[in-house]
Image 1 (cartoon, helix red, strand yellow):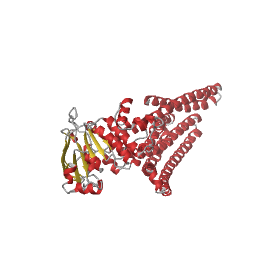
Image 2 (cartoon, helix red, strand yellow; image 1 turned 180 degrees about the vertical axis):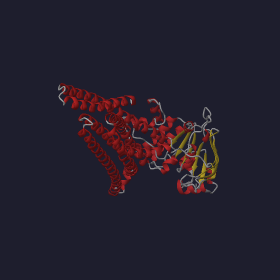
Image 3 (cartoon, helix red, strand yellow; image 1 turned 90 degrees about the horizontal axis):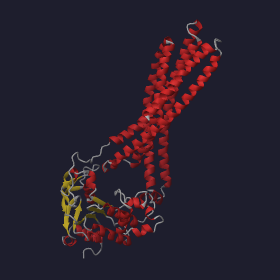
Image 4 (cartoon, helix red, strand yellow; image 1 turned 45 degrees about the vertical axis):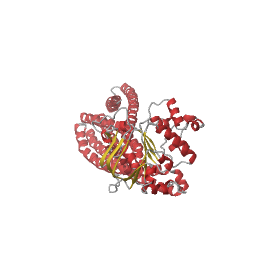
Length: 564
């Protein structure tokens, strides 16, 4: 496609450059009365040249726009693929709305440069080079005058283009801030309306949009100034050269046709320079967007698969081993989330993790899934340290049922099959039946093909949780992670979800973060965390006898009769 675009550009440029030659011969020969029929021939020739120019321009237009769309599609795909591989630490310091702005608005800026701007640049460069050569052939003397004027045209344009680039970067930043705020507000629209925050949110977004407009306006002013300077300098240069050449015509040193030819080539060259100045403005604008995308692509994940990963044993056993593990989150390095944690979980064992808020329970899951690496100690799965295994192989050993299920704006079937590529319809139905979700799904208008709103807002909390359980069933992983999976449910929904969880826990190693006493009492063993430390371990009965943290939590949080 690039070759086709270049060929079309060359043909169009050559066709354009032949026009002054035809005009010169028409003036010098046709108007002189030597052969009046030459005028008709040259006009027909010009029509033919116009047809070639039109066809070549059409081919160029298609090719360069195809290239622009192809480039931007590839960039978006590559940037998104890169973003999905970045560790959670990146998203702790980056606003998702701003990241989306870079993925969409910034790539659109690049599309303009990759298609129209670049093709115009090549076309104008070809015209400038061709016109320059023909100017020298036509009149070396006048060409030297033009050559002297070129630095006075080009240098101001280059200097001015730098300011356009900086203003473009600022405009994209302000647009990203506005987009980020809009994304965040609309994502929490129920809370926004419940607190009657509509007017304040609209006013704040309006201010962000105005800042974006002001920045874009400054960029536009700079580009307009760049264009004005270019056109004025070029026009003055052409007029000067025309005056200089007119002296030669009056003295008889040059024919009128030759001067006309030179002036037309000079106009083509001047137009090419003017076009290049506009292109330079667009490229400067796109460069600001490219820098922002480059920053995303340069962001490296702190969590990577090792160069030579160890194979996890097959078949999987589902064993977990924490040995003297310490960890602090990157944003809170001075506060230890885990301090010298050591415990083992055997194949098929059910272990509950309890403790007050902020004790480090969820951090255990984050280290198992290797969202982070511990600052000290070792986390092993089936005898292999997690940082020595291939990431995809490691995470395929886990099925997660979070407290807030992550559902997507897709069909129910697609949500259940999320992470289980290639799952058949019958397998999806079996997973839903196991999770006690089949009946309510079939009661929906389109059954399994029912489209869910973003986050599954059209379903109840219990229904969303059962779809999350069905997803874990279909995952069929040896280790099940339950993060307070029933804490936000009513009694009826909790009973259904708990029955589903009991079925899928059979034969699997299970770690449960729980506050509900019923969930804890089903565990083979209970691990008690407090301020990042493992303070107690045992069964419900043995821990209740110790008068420690677990008994206090059971008395205060679980149930009034927990101490009995």
